[in-house]
Length: 464
Image 1 (tube, one colour):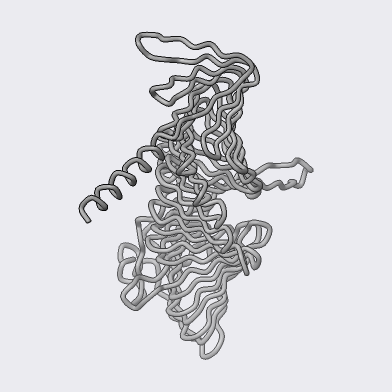
Image 2 (cartoon, helix red, strand yellow):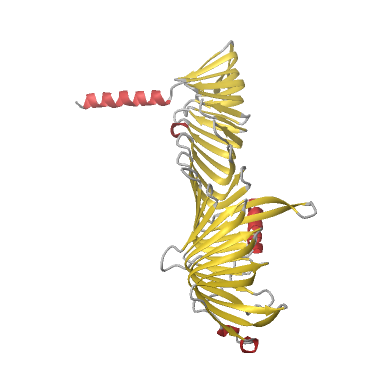
């Protein structure tokens, strides 16, 4: 029994050794044998063919190191294994590792992707490629470039690092690291992530991105920021054309993009929005692209209402819906505990105030034209005569309409059991803080466009 076990052990050891030491076979038109520093080598030239199992390599010349089971490959090197082809001008094949390497420019083609680089290694048993320097990966939908890339053929997976860029028909993605699953079309990006959309001139920055192309869904969940530059043209009364640059900034803790069934953008938690005279702070913003509609909401009783600013006006409410037309605000609806505050530009202690169940505001050429108030309307608005203070009016009604000129209140109309009371200037002057509605709040930390530009420039500098 012991003798039988010893025989089994010896046979398995011999088989294991022979598998590990499967010798490469090199043939060609001519062969020269030499011994250099005690090592036997063979130089094979002309129509050289190297084989080891299912690996086949052709080249013009090979230097075979017999004891090491290696070979140096020179001239028009082509390695194949099933559907895989690797081409280079000069390289090495390591028989014990079943690995090939080259620093003379490498092209890999496995009928799924084409991979090129200045240098690379391929492990035939693992179906794994490690490419370095000026790496490019091409498939049917995108092009990826980086300085280092690991390609795992069995998983249809590419892990790229160092100056990574993916270009497809719509977007260009930059990152420190990208992990891309080709078959499932799932991509993870981390470190200095930038998404450039070639269709709408937008940039999205962040530190971590997940893209699920088949599900038409993308999430950026670490320091996301969206920047979109729009240009619009207008013609003045003299016929001169003016080009206007308008930049949109959105910053939050989480950004999500749904591309189907409807195009939807969601910003969540600590949301900041700036565009021209408009800005907002809220906990949830939803942008429905096809409907050209933006919705911000109070997400729970414990959270603050969304706040919006337009020029010198501040709006709060449980829900705010913005309707866009030709890239400009057409209508703004505030629902639930709506409150509007407008600060006078010349007398900054004086605030026109209105509260209601809901408010609808209408715009033209980026200016407020009128505001309609519905349900338990209470208002305080200051009066002026030839731009000088002239007291204030307190009013209440079921509904109201306020008209504006140059974003300043010009006329107030009350409907449904209206009531009003006038307070003369001598009673008001110096006592403006006494004339505030119960829900009055004036938020001073309005988002600053210049700070956003400064932050954007810092991000660009870090990327550079």
